[in-house]
Image 1 (tube, rainbow, N blue to C red):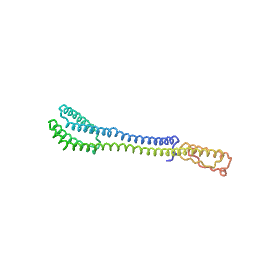
Image 2: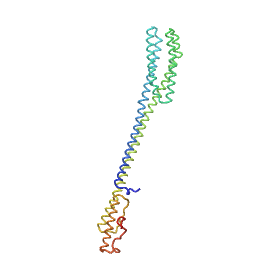
Image 3: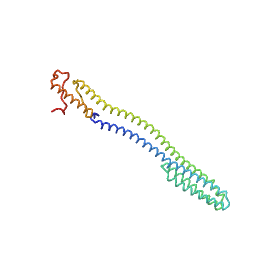
Length: 287
């Protein structure tokens, strides 16, 4: 459809609406990318970082239980042994609480598998630790030391290794989320710049099209008016479209036809020998 078939007001409204849509699209894309960056940042804040802190708490609690277990082997006073056992229970309670916090933050099957392996290693260590504790409480210190050296130390090393793997997975997850944030930011900058440039170009093109669709017909109408005013009635007026400039050209054509008819009627010139030639009047002038 030709732009000349639309009124100037409607045409300008459409062009401005298109430019507004371009701005809205640019703003919407920027908001979408900001939301993506926020989601990755939120993932670090609410999942990976708390999981790392919980795994650190697990490590501290298990280290405390291990240290108190070894300390138990060096104590002979019942009061000291009871004090160490009480502190050991506190360490186990802290370990249980840290386990609960961490388990609620598991976000992948790989992490769940690694956590399950750690729990199995921890349970083996705790079961052997109970054996050592019972031997100490029953006064069988040498047997307790043998149990520590033969099994407990190996279980402890396995537990620490599984916990280290768990921590490594969380650090990788945090790094990946941070990397995704950086990638989204970089892509967003490029896309926003590209859309901004495209919007500027589209705005310029639309502005030029709108200006030409208005200025061109008005200039044509002005030229026709000047030609008629100079007395030259030989130029046929051509009006295209149905906008305001087209209506103006049609009005000029009708006026020119009236002038030609008046000249012929008054006999100031011979219609067959004048310097202009007639043509059919506009439809609204015919009777």
